[in-house]
Amino acid sequence: MRLLDDQAALPGVVRMRRWVRDALAVRPGETAVDLGCGTGTEAVELARLVGEAGRAIGIDPNPSLLALARDRAGETQAEFIEGSAYALPLPAEVVDVLRCERVYQHLDDPARATAEIARVLRPGGRVAVVDSDWSTAIFHPGEPQVLAALRERMDSGIPNPRSGRRLRGLLAGAGFAIDDIGSEAVVWDPVTVLPMCRDIAESGFADGVVTAEQRDRLIADIEGGIAAGDYHFSVTMFAVIAHKP
Image (cartoon, rainbow, N blue to C red; front, side, top):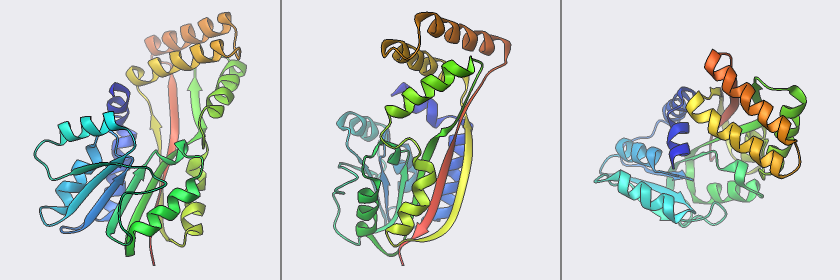
C-alpha cells in the first residue's frame, strides 16, 4: 500500500492524472468507472465530478485494496466492486466514462480487456487508458551492463512490459476513435526509487542474473548517487483518449 501511495504522489503521476481528468471532461450525472482502482483515489475524484446524480464505480480484483478503498472513500458515494478486466461486472452500454491506469502492463490478453471496455461503454462513451512503457526506463548511476541485465530480468517478470506503445493500436482495433494522446516521463524520488532498486538488485542476484558483488556495487552506487544528488530514475507513461462511435 505504501508503494502505491508513494507513486500516486509523484509529480509526474499527479500531472498525468490531471491531464486525463481534463481530457475526459466528466460531467455531473454520468456513470464513470475506474478500472484497476487500487486504493480508490481516482474513483473518489470521479464521484466528486459526477455528483449525487451520477455514479462512480471502482473495479479491482484485489479484495484487500478494495477494503482499503472503501475505508478511505468515507462518506462519498463511490462504489467499489471486485472484478476482472476480462469480465467487467457491469451490463452492456451503461458507462459514460472509463479510465484505466497502469493495468494493461499486468495483462496477458489486453485485447480481451479492451473489448470488455467497449462492451460496457455507451455509444459516445469516453475512455482513457494509461500505462507505462518499461523500455523507456532510465537508471542512473550504475554499471551499464548490470543495469541492462536487470532491466531484461525485470521485463521478463511483467506480462506486458511495453504496453504503453500498444495502447493506441489496441483501442483502434476494438473500434474506438482516437481523440488524443499524452505522455509524461515520471521521475521517481529517492523515497520511492531506492526500495524498488534494492528489490530489483536482490531479485536479480537470487535469479543468478547478477553476482553478489555486482548487486552490492549497484546498491552502493545508487545510495551514493542519491546522497550526492546525482541520481535519476524515470519511466514514461502514455495515455490514449478515445471514444466509442
